[in-house]
Image (tube, rainbow, N blue to C red):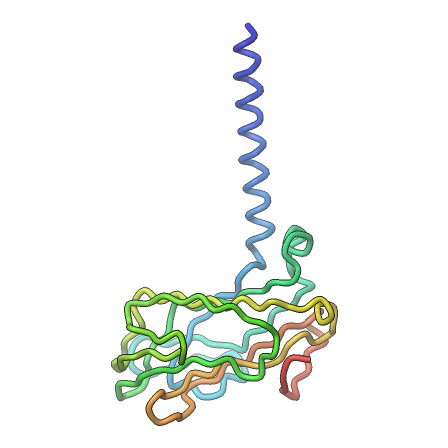
Length: 196
């Protein structure tokens, strides 16, 4: 009889642990990462737009992270880290291009994590081989984790900058994707600039 009681307690503990983990994942995960796709060349992405060219059309928009829209567990357990991620960079142009990826006007610490089937130099943040027209970088995963300093965490505008995708050989800008981190979406400063 004692073993039966222990089994019941173990089953109930496992059930509530699983239920709690699911609740945690749904609350924590809804604001953990902003996912987006990139088309090159796409120009300056100042509003939601569809970029057409070689391959399928790519929908793009400026990236805005509103710290007030995060889940409660995220606010408590991990308030100073925000992440963005892409799994798609597609060449919608007519010629092959070697792509360099840069963060522009971002003065807060950012951790990059990157993997792809296309050879990549992490020091210059450049793909070493050209991406053919109409093709996407295979098995791509690039994550950027913004580490927001405590003195900026509650600013109205925490950070304004962007991701620059350029031709690694000519230096020509291919796509610029603005990134803004705010506290409340009505506080966005549209004048551009850098992290405050």
